Image 1 (cartoon, rainbow, N blue to C red):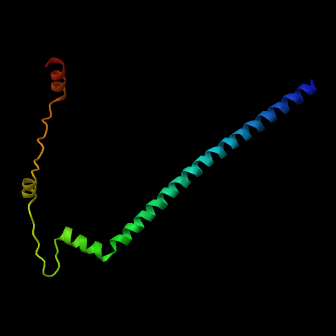
Image 2 (image 1 turned 60 degrees about the vertical axis):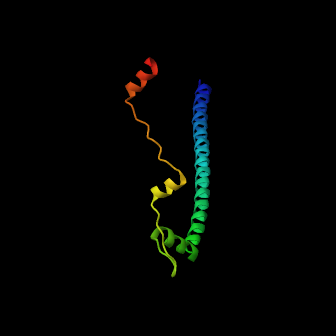
Image 3 (image 1 turned 90 degrees about the vertical axis):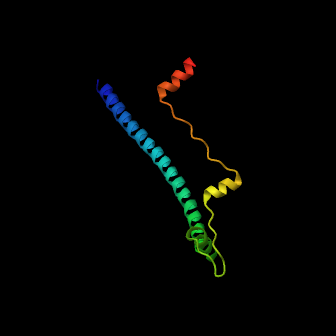
Length: 117
């Protein structure tokens, strides 16, 4: 009887110990996954940071500033003349026409047309 009791207690202790070990292993595996995700995010942010730095360097150049002043502010160099042509005139010369917008039908009428016309 005493051997059975010791065997049962020993089995319970082994089961509890095994359960705890398995839980710790599972936590470690989840932590590794989170670590890998964080490393991937860090890499993406570093790439984006490099892109933004190169764009900032480009924006600081005098050529970019001149281009933006000409295009967005309508400024010119000394001796130049600014000519503004309305967009509708450009479209007429190029032969571009505005697309006719499709008339939106109510949903029920659209289905009616599909089945009965």
